[in-house]
Length: 337
Image (cartoon, rainbow, N blue to C red; front, top):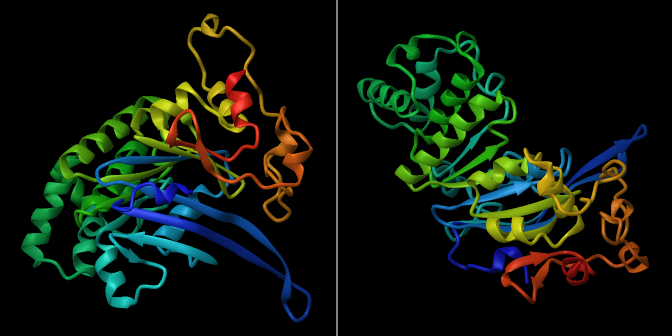
């Protein structure tokens, strides 16, 4: 069983998604290797809910998001959105689907055109999709600015005239302009001050309630993901290693990697921790030459010979049923400890 088969009526279902970047060398530019950025990812996002996708930098989270939106052409797999596979869809289907799929980028400055005013930036989605006339577009821009907490005079200013948090509000306004169904949030608060992060997160939650949005929330900070997610998928070196509801994952993490990530969350009261917490050792292996078997075994304190040979499959853990899946040969024994 995979994460994407749990709910056949999910808004988005990703099945066995792979993105391998070829490495070419020599005079004839022949293939000499590949970067296995995404290597068989399956997940689902339900209507009106948020799926958090977490993991260390370089694990392939952003690549998954870009493949879902077809900003990258995946090597293999399926991306089923509202019953249609986007990876095999023709031009007319994709044009309709793109109105329902939007993205919030990590860098709130680089993602905005520095030569355009905010008014032009927010009007562009309506121009591209030929929606409304100039008067209607101007009215829509004013409504978007108000919805994200900016004044109407912001439309005549340029991105460099705003703070990082304000620029991210502009990016959010652009992402909701066409009233999408799914928004891919690619680390939308990681570049912001901590005090501003909470404001942006609360804005995203408010927009979700008002508009019925679904989010794929990509981040490396599990404390942030816990605050906004209904379900969480933990990713390591191109693969999903654990998949569960947010509450279950934080209360009973099964995979050693998830346990280490949760242990790394700062606690204002260290005395609350009754036992030593696992600490990750070493660096993430290269996605060009990923380890055989379980990709995590070189850094896992519980690894055994089986882990070095046999690739664990993402399967339900008996205690929690389909609500909690993990890819670890010894998850049960670890959970008992």
